Length: 331
Length: 123
Length: 146
Image (tube, rainbow over all chains, first blue to last red; front, side, top):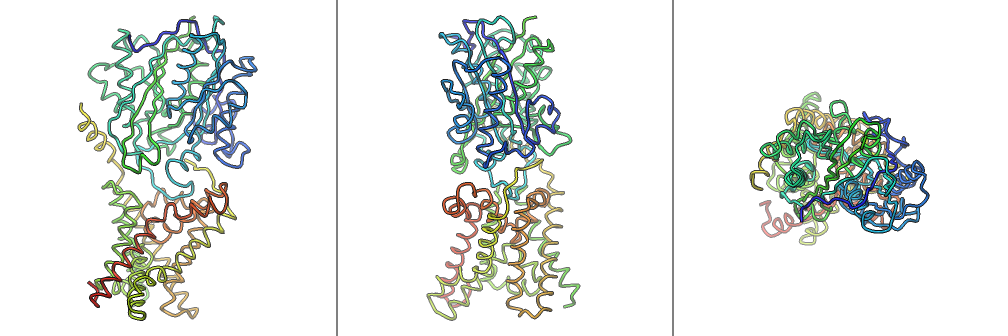
């Protein structure tokens, strides 16, 4: 069996929403957010709860736009230990909850899994929501918020953002998820937690080579090949890894981590990262743009770096995984 | 020495300790925590071999404020404790010498936690 | 390319920190903190402090100011540029103790702040005590420093 999974039913994106924080509002894509919080707290007493609330809001907005009260299935994940932002936030809508962990690739993983689920059983609607919060992630993975550390040029900035999408079967309109290629975990033995781009690029290359190798398509067959958060560094490395077999990939490639923030003007170093990065850019920017007819066929590759604080301290390497979904807008 | 010179030496020596650490940070894969541990242990060592004492006289706070100075304070405290109490000084010396700084950091740190709220990072 | 080549490539690319400007910034900020400390020490001596105590007084003062800066959210902004310039002086230690304390308030005073206050500074404390007692043992046994 090939790795490209084709859904047996027509699954469409009914509606989407994106919620963000202070820096996200100030970035180049500030206008795509349905709501942003000035203080990143979303009225909560901890940043962890703030992330849960942010994800809940994104889901709520998306459901409202799609005129759905309760989806048949809810796929959700985040970066917090045991994905509590998802279980504390979006899960409160009361839908059957399927928790996911793919680190920063979770949105693509969720969209793919939701499509497969709708294709394979009687469920008609499914919601997918993921989030990340800079403060919560820094505290968990790196250092206390006020700690005076210096960031290296390859370091990325975890986005405080959430993205939600409501999928439906048999509606006949909207962006279609026409294929899902789940990634393989690729461990290039990178141990530098400040260089996620290098850790994830090999898995993105593996997924892209598998897709193009199997489908026989070429880069020009797509309007956009979007990666989640390889950042500037990871994007360059991806180009190097694919130089031989997919040289024209760079012509169509953009990275959400480089779109969400202004690399030149802001101190993001290599760009944005976190589940919320691809989630918000895809939900708030790309999918609406497809609905307006700006893009017809795109590949979205969520890239995730798989590690935890203990594995890092033990000198373990950071493996990567990259899930690909194909989005098409019929005109 | 003249006042001006003591300020100059404090600046030059203190800056040098920091610059060396920065080079270690940027050029090697040493993490900040490991560099600080290296400095503090080096401070004990340099005091033990009789180098840090004169350095303190020469550079004042330029030698005292860097973390090597903390190590030297511990070294000095241990030595004095042993001179006064004998072998027990091995156990009582280190923490007693460092007591002032540690207590201050803990007390002020805890007060700060009561008074201030951690703010999210900004670009 | 194989894993080894990949690792080398990524490390070579990653080692492109602006070393010169970082080192200069560290030198200037660190030197200034020590200069400030020295001026403060002379002030304390003028105010009647004994030479012995003057060093501790400065250490405590710098700790106080660093904790204040940490609480106000200013320390990390300076540290971003200064790097080792704020890390190496005792200001770094003060920041390393106060920053987790601020973070862990939501987890309560005992299990949060209490358990975590040494999360970052712990190694410095442990190894200074270890080095100190080792030196103490040698000093006691051989009577002379090394």
